[in-house]
Image (cartoon, rainbow, N blue to C red; front, side):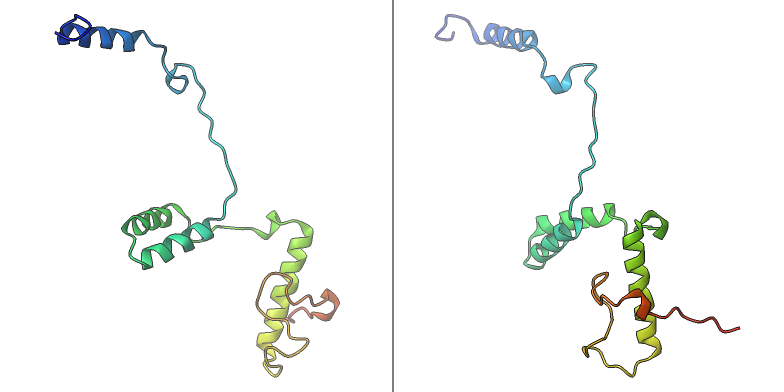
Length: 137
């Protein structure tokens, strides 16, 4: 017998009935639409942080890192036609400059005028100064 004067079995039945009478949570009501959102995020920063924590011995971080690496694509297919004109021109400039640097290794890296690998547009060589590769017939 409880302090309220009801025995335990009856109190349990009352509790179950009270829970059943409560309205369901919003997230579980029928007819609720489920929406998926796409949110930009820096996956590389997350992977770097998890890798660093895993190196320090965090088992949780190493498991999460494995899960991230299973989900992420190793190579994301990108077409240059998907790029805007300015980015496409910067990419073309950089690629032509890298090809020119490979063809003429006489100018060492780090010297003024050197256009080499780095962020797109880092060399900032004007398009007029970059020669298109000639095709050998």
